[in-house]
Structure formats: C-alpha cells, structure tokens
Figure 1 (spheres, one colour):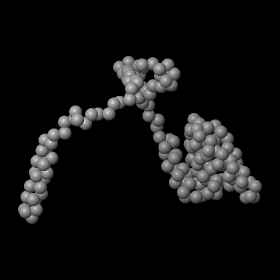
Figure 2 (cartoon, one colour):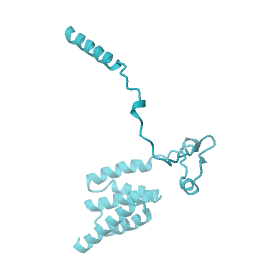
Figure 3 (cartoon, rainbow, N blue to C red):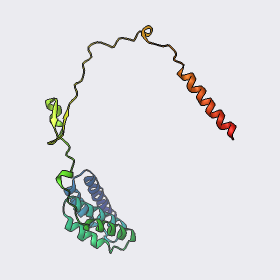
Figure 4 (cartoon, rainbow, N blue to C red):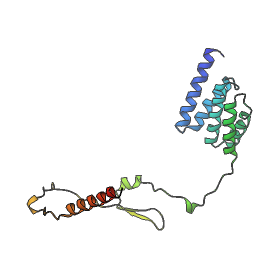
Length: 175
C-alpha cells in the first residue's frame, strides 16, 4: 500500500474512532467505511478498522449490517481478529431482553428545578423530594467562651486505660 493511501486510511480510521467515542455514530460509520474501502481487509489494520465498523453499525442501530460484517470477520486470516469477531458476534446475536417499565429508575430532569428554583418536585406517583431550605447566615458565628464549657475530668479515660492494661497483662501472663 502506498504511503499516501496508508495516511488516508489512518486519518479516516482515527476520525471514525474519535467520532464513535464522541457519540457521533453516523459520522463514525462514514469514516470507518471510507477507511475499510481503502485498506487491505485481510491485514491487521484492516481487521481493526472493520471491528470498529461493526461496533459503529451496532451503535447507530444497524444491527443487521453489524452481524453480517462480524460474521465475515470470523473467517479473517488473523486469529486475534477471528476471536474478537466470534465474541462480538455472540453478543450481537444474543436475544434482547425487555425490562418492564416499573423496574426502571426514572431520573428527573433537574434543569427545570435550577431554572425555576422550585422548592419541591415530583419524581413518580409515590416519590417526591423536597428541596431543603438553606439557612441564611447574616452574622459571623461568635467564638465559644471556654469558661462556659464543662472541662471537668470524669476519669473515664483512666478507667479505660487500666482495663486495657489488665487485659493485655492477662494475655501476656497466660502465654
């Protein structure tokens, strides 16, 4: 492969990966398809590009194309690519589970709360949250007068220390 062609493949491949990781799946598919068309599909790089294309197809909702390409990759000359394709194909062909709506956690949209400064909002039929009132501090807290604090020793610390020493002494004597 010429250096110009390899550079274009690398550029499109990187653009596809960046678009995929940014959530721009249609753009990722376009860049990765361009790279796949220019690269030797049986090379290591060709396998990598095609694996990314499979995940981009799936992320963009084109599961049939993802399964088809992944099936082709299970016969790729490189063992590593074949193994990855088999694992991914197993996942893609797995039955989709349906989750009842009552099992789902609904996260409220808090943007309206910040905009309206509402004091409460309703999440569901049985759950509501109340925004706690934030106390306003007009004055600086005054320092505590230490003459008013009870600092008399209640001798608890001495009783606890003696008990600890007796227990430890009993353990050492028993050995």
